[in-house]
Image (spheres, rainbow, N blue to C red):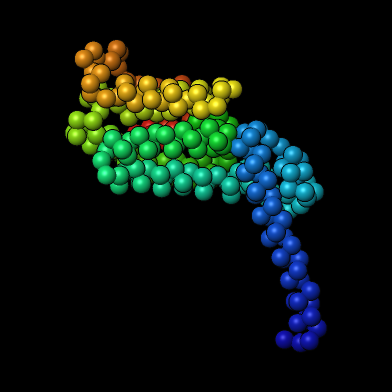
Length: 233
């Protein structure tokens, strides 16, 4: 390598470092903006929060879908890890309570994650495929936790996995109330209702099917029910 080539290479290094710093600032700003306002927030707002120009955002991420993908695939992976931790709890009831509580906490704290999981916005097909693949890893684990909780006599026998999915949906709705943590009181009522001591009267009707749940939560989506973290196969 010639001296001229070496000098040119050294001159380019600060630019690459600046680009990486800008990328991290953009991702951090996007995490905040999407958590607060949801995935409809624009790149202009993210650029302002990051302290960079909109052109810089577009150089790092050609469109908003690529930015969402970089940010939220890791969020879904965190749900996968949470489900696996719940499976390894000392007993199935503890695991189930931990799973429901922590997943609702995550969705309430991060509006963008909720919209991604519940199909409230359109995302690139490549990202949707990744989310569906990761959620597919969650489904059988949640079903196994629920089955074990029933076997241990901790949960009433007529509860389905789709019931748990609807429970999360309802609790997230309560999380929008202005009273902080109002959803936790409702969660306590839900958990009490899951216990076998309260199963003297059968639950009315039948649980939703996977397809019914998908149609209710994401009626315009085509494909498998991959938007809810606890929808089974």
